[in-house]
Length: 420
Image (cartoon, rainbow, N blue to C red; front, top):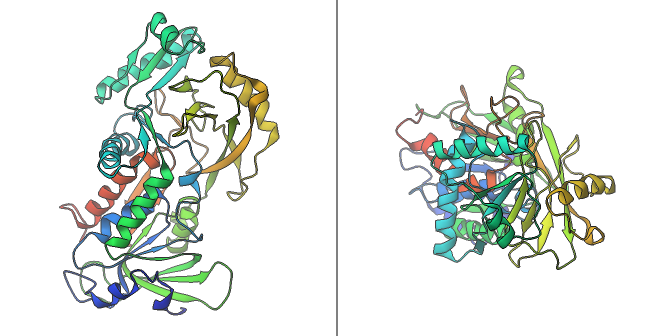
């Protein structure tokens, strides 16, 4: 085990507050912190904010980069999803719907930039139209509004859109400034006395023996600085939340026995910029979902200034750190884009940036009719490891679901059905 955690590494804004409070409202603890959250993306920040609000506790956020939200959370479409793609009884459906309402409420209360753009899902033939019919039927069953548009409505509202078979509109879909959202979460966490360590890589987790009944002795988290300077340090915590995104399965495998370890999968998505002012849709445009595809197809989204961008596509990769756009992806993307926006200026479409989604397998991004190939979020306090909560495969709609995921994690730990 490394040397005890050096307190001076925590953020100066709040470092003194942690050591002046009792760490547990229920018993005396010898751990450095009540809660340690590994991973500072949107979900990790939301959980940190949620748990830091509990009286008599202390919470630390451990992030391997120099700033929060620099991986999946800042390399996505920034869409607030409606919750219609993920099938009955899934965590993705439940948390997306709950998270969507929480996110809109928070944005309005805290003036976080967002825009209720609405979304069109576009069908070009009868088979695609059947997919839209299935989505519409399912959306009614979960009380999420969708409706079909007439040909006249399509032409009047978005005259540049090609929709040979029809359009299903999702009126509760929107976009959010994800950076402003994460800045709010980080600030709220700091105001509640939370601590952060940046540029810190977790190299091991060990369950500690001892303690009283309940969560026992907690966990020792071994860390090192990202630049490799100095030796190892150790942070101890009663509760550990693994919200490490692209690194979450690696973190889980540090603690789980061999028979419960997993293989990580990664879906790289390339985004494409658009330098022309025409056509200029005011609505998010999505092709009809393709069964078996790892995402939702190369769609058109908007930024907060109303500029169009396209993506992501899906490319299965082994290296989650490879964020270099691949020029070979451009032609296929253009073909998809022209299917629903035929007047697009192809010369104005260019490679922009890439993001990588953590996956539990080569799974589809939508539920489909029978759910085949669909993988739900994995959010669980692991059996035999009380106080260790794993969040694996937190891809889309993770940003939309983040506040609801934080609520769920707190309930797992402290609600009526908590294990201890």
